[in-house]
Image (cartoon, rainbow, N blue to C red; front, side):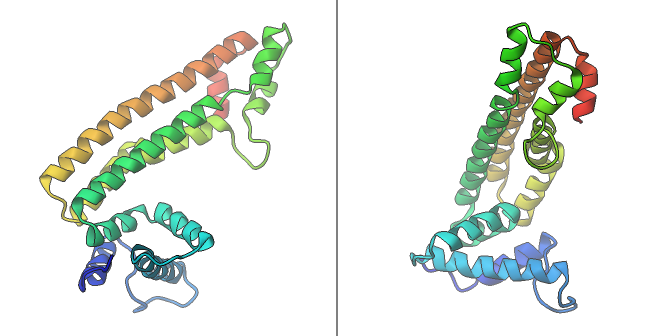
Length: 221
């Protein structure tokens, strides 16, 4: 695919309206803003190469995927200037499906089966041991807090406002905006049910362990 002559100008116009730096003018060397500008310049350049059909390699592809996730709004801008509005809507739909799947994965791996089996065999556990079972084996944090943060980041009202601000910046049509609104709200409700089920799992664990559920929840958050 060969992109149109004005695609790059439109891309930088959009990302500038999103609040990203678009030139070195006024930026200090070594600043975080310079890093963002460098990443977005590399991202645009490599995406153009990628859609031209050239082989970019696994390492470059992985880096592109990482930046597309970090700058998801700029990625939508790239899709708008290269493939158009319908492709933007499709990308948002795919992202929603991906994030729902990841939220389900968080829920399915929330409770350590070993501690449940121990309790069901008549073993005794304390609040501290239940909390330990919910912590990551490496790094800080616990699985429930991670899941809660993921839910807020991708299905919270803040994300909803930002998503529609981005669509406005991209000058999406009312039809596209309504389509995304409908699908996002359906996904929000689904995500809320997944979170409710996760809390039920925790409540069930607390009851079986003989510990206070509210205290457990407060300790996790």
